[in-house]
Amino acid sequence: MVNGLTNETSLKPNDGSNETKVLMGMADSPSDVEVQMVPDVSPHVTPPGYLPNNDHGTTPFTAKQVENILHSVIATYKRYPTDKKFRLSGIVAELQEAMLYDPSTHSKSENPAGIELAIPGANVMMKEPKHRLKSGKEVRRNAKKLKVDIEVQKMGLSQEISDGTYIAVANPSRPIFHCGFCKNNHKYPECEKREELSLNSMEYMLTSEKPAISISLKNRLKLGMPLRGFGDKYTVVGNVSKQLKNANFIIHEAAEVCGKICGQVESMNYCVTFLDKNANMMNEKTRMWVTGDVMIELITHTNKKIKWVFDETIIHKVGWVERTSTCTLSQEIQG
Image (cartoon, rainbow, N blue to C red):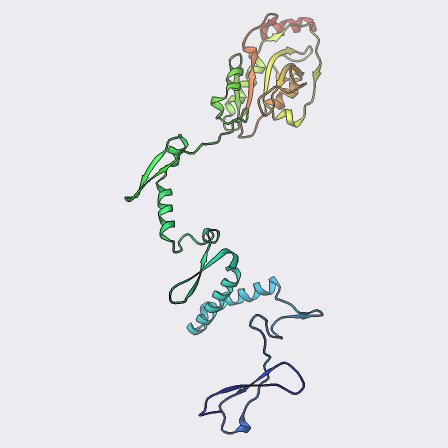
């Protein structure tokens, strides 16, 4: 000890162990010198005793242990004195730097004073909070984005944006639409396939948002749809797959089933053609006859997504009869 100051010297014990340090505190005589054996470790190596041990040596904290420590610090942080809050703030800053700083994502710059700065890359800056300090270039770029009218861009029109010093031209964007009927790049009101089918049929757009359309179609099937005459034979399908139940379809004609009550959807069979997701007729699913029970399943649509049904029976064909006369004929045959 010199003039009451603390000196630190290094000693090497004779037993060949690691280098130790002798800490000499304030003392009145050499006999009062306090000797403490402290391991000399690398700054990147945690001293023994701080971390849990197992059979293979020292291991880092588990995620649960780190979580418990941080929770206890957060719970009591407000009650700490100011000097302790400063100490914890410094530790948190080091923790944040250890977690977020990646040398591969930063570039280094040295000013004339010899101070070296780590400059974050674009990917790192994008993850930073919105209210962080921004460079002038980034501020100007964001200001230009705010002036771009999205609706004008969707219309295919370009914009000239001026900030007082220069004029920037914002090129129009090309919107991508997906037709709900044929899946092509346009809106369904502009779909040519849909318009072609609507020329010779009545279009029903079934959706849960407009239940009145489903009721109108059901009334058409029950009371207003003309029927083909008796005598023609056809094969009727009493069950269809889930894919066909969700598919758009065309109603070509309807025929009454003898022995069933008139004026009911279940009392008739229907000739239909199913369409695939591209609005093309499915192979082997064209002009197939289904029962009235299947038709009830096909027109029962509870989704918001639109399902299209095209009724071709609005154009009367030779051999068809109106519903009332057919019911009378059917009753006569049954009698």
